[in-house]
Every structure is written in C-alpha cells, then in structure tokens.
Image 1: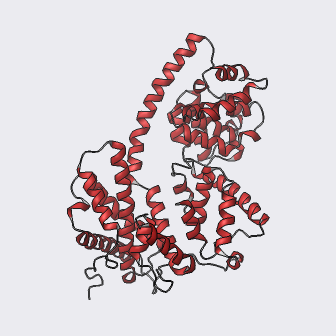
Image 2: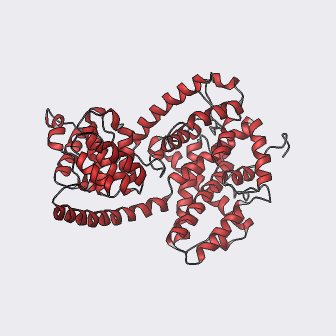
Image 3: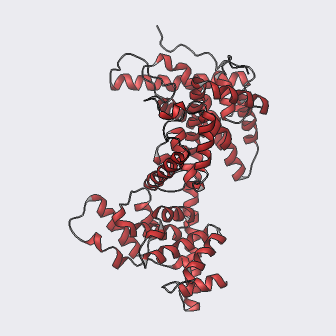
Amino acid sequence: MDPFPEPEPLAEESSAAWPERLRALGARLRAPLPAAERGAVLGEVWVLLNLALGQGVRGQAYRVRHLSADDVVEIAAGQASELLLRIDAGEWGPADLSATQLRGFLATVARNGVVDLYRKRRREVSIPEGFDVPSGPAGEPSPALAVDGDAYARAIADCAGRLSRRARRAWYLRALYEIRSADIARDPGVATTPAGVDAMLARCREQMRACLEGKGLPLGPLPPGTFVRLWEREA
Amino acid sequence: MSAAVHPGEDRLLDLAAHLLAPAAAEATVRHLETCPPCEDRFRELCRAAELARLRAPHARRRRRLWIPAAAAAAALLLAALALGWWVRGRGSDPAAYWFPVDREMGTLRTGEPSAEEEVFRRAVAAYRDRDPAQVVALLRDRSIPEALDPLKIVLASALVKTGEFARADAVLEDLRIETLPQPDRDRASWIRYAALRGAGRDEEARGIARELASHPGEFAGAARRQVAD
C-alpha cells in the first residue's frame, strides 16, 4: 500500500484569505517593481508559503513517525525556498493558479517534502514506533499556571516595556517562541552576534524575574491565554 | 466564533498572517484566550512565521549584495574622511579612530594558543594591518570571552569602518561601556559615537559627545568640536 497517497488539497474553510493573498502578491510580482517594494512582496510571499506548506506538512505528519515541530518548519522552508526561487526567476507564480488549484499544488509540494524526509530517514536509521508531533510546549506544571492569563500578560507587557526595544524583541522571540540565539541574532531589530543575544537574554531574564517578583508573580512558562494576549499587544 | 467551535488551520493561518477582518480576528483571539490547545496551535504557527522571517533567503541574499556595496561606500567615505583628517591636521573624525591594540591585547601573546585564540590573534593582526573587513569576517559570529572584552571594542571599531553601524552599536551595548575601566571606557564611547552617527541616530550620538566633552580625557577636545559642529 502506498504510504503516501496523493493528498487532499489543503481543504477546510472555503473563506480562507491566504490563497487569495498569495495570488494577489504573485500578480504584483509580474509587473516591474522598485527593488525595495519587490523585496517586501517577496518577503510576504515567503512567509505565507512557509505557513501554507507547514499546514500541508502537518496534514501528512500522521504518515511519518517522529515529525517534530522543527521538522515541519524545516520541510516547509526547504520547499518554500525552491518555490521562491522559481517565483523570483519568473518561472512560476501563485497567480498562475486559481485559489483551489493553489491549495492543491501546495499540498502536493508539502507531501513531496515529507516523502523526501521519510526516504532519507529510512536510509539513515530505523525509527521506533510512535508519532511525535508536539501540539505545544510541555513540561512541568508552572507555578504561573495558577495565575490569570490576562493579569500575567499585563504584568509581562509592563515589565518587558522597561527593557530596551532590542532587548524586548530578543526576549519575546525566546520566551514566546523558543527561538535559538543564532536565529534571534539575525533579527534586524536585534542585530548582534549569537553570543551577544545570550548575554542580552541573561540580563533580560534577571530584569524580568525581578520585575515580576515585584508584582508577586513568578517567571515561568506562560499560563493559558497569556501568549495570545501578548501577541495581540505586539501585533 | 462560539467558544465551542474551534478555529481550523486556515483561520489560524489567516490570523497569524494578519489577513482576517477585524471582527473575525477579535472573535478568534477571544476563543484562543480560553482554549489552551488552540492557543498552542496558534503559537506554533506564529513561531513558524517568525522563523520564516528570520531565515528569509531573499533578505540574506540582498544583505550579501549590500555588504560589499556598503564596504566599498564606507571605504570611499573613509578615504574622504582620512583626506579631511590630513587637511585639518587633527584626528577629530570618530570613524577614522583606531583603537590601540598593541597594549590592550597583551593577553593574546602568551602561552600556546588554542584554535580559537589563534583566530583572535589573526583578528588583532588584521586590525593592526588596518583590515577591518577581515576583522569582521573573523569575529562576526564568534563568542568572545569576557576576559577579552577589548577585542569586542576592536570588533565594534571594525564594524564602524565597514559601515555596519547598527551591529557595532549592538556589540558595544552588550559590552556595557559604563562598566569598563578608563581609558577603554572613553575609547569605546568614541567608537559608539561614530556608530550612532553612522546610523543616523544623531541625538543619541550628541549625548555621548557631550558626556565625553564634559571631562578631561583623550577625546575631550574632539568631542567638544563634534558638539559645536
């Protein structure tokens, strides 16, 4: 039996905005644009391709054992990179397809990425049974979990507001997304070395801990509802 | 969106990409506040979006093109500034300043060097040879131990000279200039002044110049001239 049958298109809510947005961006890239504007459009296309392909990869995850969240990101980035090169070279564009066709195409590209990983891993090592697709951060229960998410979000936003803009950006990338220092160092708002990020984050943690403790709150994993409130404030 | 209806993948993707209409975004966010599994899915999507932005290939490609152009522009600028320096007969241009390495880097000249120390030695030698691009290439992504803090000043100075002003400022901010002993504190401040000027952050730069001008030291005169300009 084929473990990788052709995927269903990235099917779900017919009112999804992202396929139309990708098509609109693709149409803009057909015309000559100033370099800065073209870069901004390609940047948005890149992010949307990563998200859409990640969705397709997660849809195929049940076929592959041990697909971590980072595997999903890596597969999506690899496939998105090839597509972006073709878009940049004018060989293909999202606007060439209808929204439905685009979803189907991206689902197939995502599936191909999962197949490549599956074959590579089969050659490298036998994989133990069991799926490993994390649905979110796990670990010991946080003492902060007993705190109301809204109150915790307000306290974090207040304490983070006392950090410099650079430090706050670095701290959010680590605390909210667990992004490693080498990636944080690339952020244009942070612009330092990985070692510089580590030093900055060490100071941030101390400041945040002191500030939160001053409000009677511990610094630990975020209680439910905190992340989305902070995301809404930063958006 | 009712609390019982969980948002699908598309809805979360649209929210993460800021593509939802305000009312739909509001309803989805309110749901996520009360639904930890959905919030975890959304957080994973936002993480993927952030990672994509940080790892954007076209942005890196543009930067690679930009660096040689900036370095060439900086070289031309430095040449022009150096000419001005000679014409005026006085070294008051902050970007033309070279941090003295012969005295500061004594700790690198003792004992058998490890591979990492060898890189540091080469960086110092490159700086001494007035090759800031080589210094940046050697030290850019390297962790510099606290015992070699002066090397971070060298890196910042080289970054100024290659036109990477924001990164130079970041290196010096991490160093916490105010904790350095004199005369390194003033020297690092002078390089930071050059970085801020280069980055167009003139008001912050002026504050540093005023501070340097306010006390006797290596840069008091030059800083006063900068404040007066």
